[in-house]
Image (tube, rainbow over the protein chains, first blue to last red):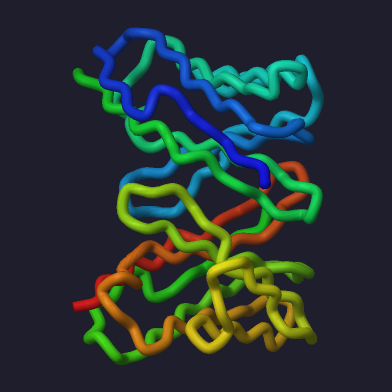
Length: 110
Length: 113
């Protein structure tokens, strides 16, 4: 079965610093979702990547999909305390379901 | 994208009792998904609920423990039965949302004492 790994597991950065979170799949990626979860709450959709080489940006967050490497990266520029939370990558499987990575916990120190 | 209202947002329950979680979607959807997120862990799919048919459960989850109802295309419930402390988790419902991936409810934080 397909599995997603995320690195790093947790991250503490100073406000204003850039950071990158990686998501690696054990199988071919047919797309990739990025979500943010505030502690103990539901998931907030960030971005959906559907094609190899695709790159999307929203405000200060950029995500890329490298199909050949079966990997996606999420980059935050000039981090702010509002970026703090758990970032989850999710991949659609061939059975119309989504599996999720273990999450990356981000703390931003003012 | 679809908006999901999930309730209750949290509850503290005695072991051996049952809790029913409700999700209401503001549009008709074919499939609804129920997830469990144990403390410090990622999301695990419990089952897929289709209107008019039995829910499809993932490995490790059974209908007796997690009965699901799907009476129409906008509503579903998940019951956590005969609860034990190991059932303490966040439970989330989700629907496919075309351009926006999958939309999630705000979650139900369950604590079993």
